[in-house]
Amino acid sequence: METRNRKVLLRGLVVDVEQMEVKFGEKGWHLYQVVRHPGGVGVLPLHDDGTITLIRQLRPAIGARMMEIPAGRLAPGEDPEVCGRRELAEETGLTAKTFKPLGAFHPSPGVFDETIHLFLATELSQKEAAPEQYEEIGTERIPLEEAWRLAMNGEIKDGKTIVALFRARGRKG
Image (cartoon, rainbow, N blue to C red):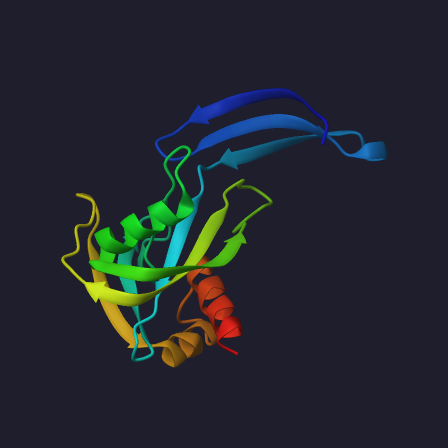
């Protein structure tokens, strides 16, 4: 990809916004703005009894509480599994013996460069949650089949959660 006139328009707390011109072959140069994000991790915690633990937290961008898998932002150079284990413990108090990759995805590649790495956590143990100071997180344990139904009918709206649920289901058989 050929670019020119790149500049950072905003350096934010979580994201930066970069503007550039991109050449599209015979169509010439076109102005683009890209939101730069360090990436993240989402973890689907699956208990031995077939239930999963989801969290509910306020998402100011949409002004609502969302039902989601535990997740968090990667630190620069951080291994996604290390981040996932940390976020799982902080947000739910759960630890997992087994972390299986469910692959990565790009939630909105037309605007963001963010990559989210997904994991299936099993062989779980419960400890005390320790969310970040600014987080108000509640947990909810529901059957995996119920979560798939909620995702199918649009009650679960979070993209990373939907992707994790359906990738896990695909691996289940």
